[in-house]
Length: 91
Image (cartoon, rainbow, N blue to C red; front, side, top):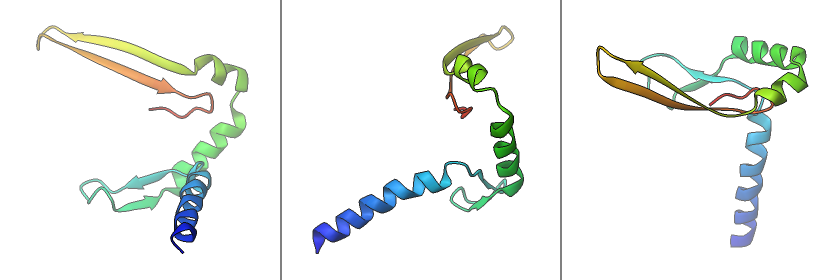
C-alpha cells in the first residue's frame, strides 16, 4: 500500500508541471502569497508570443546573463544574474 501511495504521489508531481507549464499564475498585490489565481490575460499573451516567436532567435538569447549597475549616490553596485530559456522563460 505504501508503494502505491508513493507511486501516485510521484505521478502527480510529474503531471502537474506539464499541465501548468504554459499557464501564468499571479496573485493580487498585498494578499497572502499563496493566494494564487490563473491570469488568463497574461496566459493568452504568453501563448500568442510563443506562437509568433522565432525559434532561432530564442535559442540565440538562451543562457545566463550577468549585469551590473553602479549607483554613485548610494555607493552601491547592483549585480544581477538573469536566466533566459530557449522557450522564452525568464528568471
